[in-house]
Image (cartoon, rainbow, N blue to C red; front, side, top):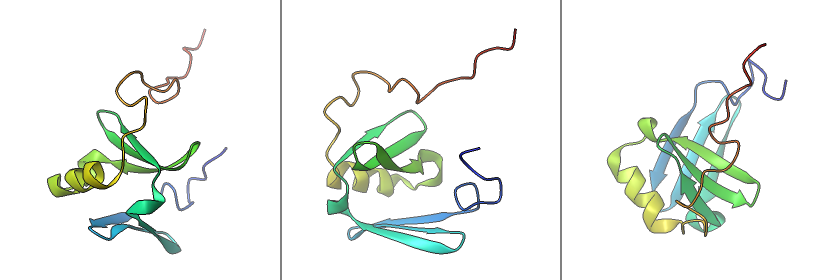
Length: 99
Protein backbone atom coordinates (compact mmCIF):
# COMPACT_ATOMS: atom_id res chain seq x y z
CA UNK A 1 0.00 0.00 0.00
CA UNK A 2 1.15 3.48 -0.75
CA UNK A 3 -0.55 5.00 2.33
CA UNK A 4 -0.36 3.42 5.80
CA UNK A 5 -3.46 3.32 7.99
CA UNK A 6 -1.51 4.75 10.96
CA UNK A 7 0.63 7.17 8.95
CA UNK A 8 0.53 10.94 8.91
CA UNK A 9 -1.49 11.27 5.68
CA UNK A 10 -4.62 9.59 7.10
CA UNK A 11 -4.15 10.91 10.66
CA UNK A 12 -5.99 13.96 12.00
CA UNK A 13 -4.55 17.17 10.56
CA UNK A 14 -5.14 20.88 10.88
CA UNK A 15 -4.50 23.63 8.39
CA UNK A 16 -4.38 27.40 8.76
CA UNK A 17 -4.33 29.84 5.87
CA UNK A 18 -3.28 33.47 6.25
CA UNK A 19 -1.83 36.27 4.16
CA UNK A 20 1.58 34.70 4.91
CA UNK A 21 0.73 31.26 3.47
CA UNK A 22 -0.35 27.78 4.54
CA UNK A 23 0.48 26.01 7.80
CA UNK A 24 -0.42 22.33 7.99
CA UNK A 25 0.05 20.33 11.18
CA UNK A 26 0.15 16.56 10.92
CA UNK A 27 1.06 13.60 13.09
CA UNK A 28 4.71 14.07 13.96
CA UNK A 29 5.32 17.43 12.37
CA UNK A 30 4.24 20.51 10.53
CA UNK A 31 4.69 21.97 7.09
CA UNK A 32 4.63 25.65 6.26
CA UNK A 33 4.55 27.16 2.78
CA UNK A 34 4.64 30.77 1.69
CA UNK A 35 2.19 31.50 -1.11
CA UNK A 36 5.11 31.91 -3.51
CA UNK A 37 5.91 28.18 -3.05
CA UNK A 38 2.82 27.24 -5.06
CA UNK A 39 3.25 27.29 -8.81
CA UNK A 40 -0.42 26.69 -9.65
CA UNK A 41 -3.76 25.61 -8.29
CA UNK A 42 -6.68 23.54 -9.46
CA UNK A 43 -9.85 22.44 -7.76
CA UNK A 44 -12.66 19.95 -7.91
CA UNK A 45 -16.05 20.22 -6.27
CA UNK A 46 -14.55 18.95 -3.00
CA UNK A 47 -10.80 19.73 -3.03
CA UNK A 48 -8.23 22.46 -3.62
CA UNK A 49 -4.98 21.22 -5.22
CA UNK A 50 -2.03 23.55 -4.57
CA UNK A 51 0.89 22.48 -6.75
CA UNK A 52 4.44 22.79 -5.42
CA UNK A 53 5.75 20.74 -8.38
CA UNK A 54 3.96 19.64 -11.56
CA UNK A 55 3.30 16.21 -10.06
CA UNK A 56 3.04 17.09 -6.37
CA UNK A 57 0.40 19.09 -4.60
CA UNK A 58 -0.96 19.97 -1.20
CA UNK A 59 -4.51 18.63 -0.89
CA UNK A 60 -6.98 20.79 0.99
CA UNK A 61 -10.56 19.57 1.48
CA UNK A 62 -12.92 22.47 0.77
CA UNK A 63 -15.31 21.38 3.53
CA UNK A 64 -12.55 21.85 6.13
CA UNK A 65 -11.88 25.48 5.14
CA UNK A 66 -13.75 28.66 6.10
CA UNK A 67 -15.00 30.85 3.21
CA UNK A 68 -12.16 33.35 3.59
CA UNK A 69 -9.60 30.55 3.01
CA UNK A 70 -11.00 29.87 -0.46
CA UNK A 71 -10.56 33.54 -1.31
CA UNK A 72 -6.95 33.52 -0.05
CA UNK A 73 -6.11 30.55 -2.27
CA UNK A 74 -7.66 32.11 -5.35
CA UNK A 75 -5.99 35.46 -4.68
CA UNK A 76 -2.46 34.16 -4.02
CA UNK A 77 -2.07 31.11 -6.28
CA UNK A 78 -2.45 31.29 -10.07
CA UNK A 79 -4.88 28.89 -11.70
CA UNK A 80 -3.29 26.01 -13.57
CA UNK A 81 -3.33 26.63 -17.35
CA UNK A 82 -5.77 23.76 -17.88
CA UNK A 83 -7.93 24.51 -14.80
CA UNK A 84 -11.58 24.05 -15.54
CA UNK A 85 -11.00 22.47 -18.96
CA UNK A 86 -10.87 18.82 -17.96
CA UNK A 87 -10.56 16.75 -14.83
CA UNK A 88 -7.24 14.92 -14.44
CA UNK A 89 -7.75 11.27 -15.35
CA UNK A 90 -7.28 9.96 -11.82
CA UNK A 91 -8.96 12.69 -9.77
CA UNK A 92 -12.35 10.96 -9.60
CA UNK A 93 -11.13 7.49 -10.49
CA UNK A 94 -13.10 4.51 -9.23
CA UNK A 95 -11.71 1.00 -8.99
CA UNK A 96 -13.04 -1.33 -11.66
CA UNK A 97 -16.07 -3.36 -10.69
CA UNK A 98 -15.33 -6.93 -9.65
CA UNK A 99 -16.34 -9.46 -12.25
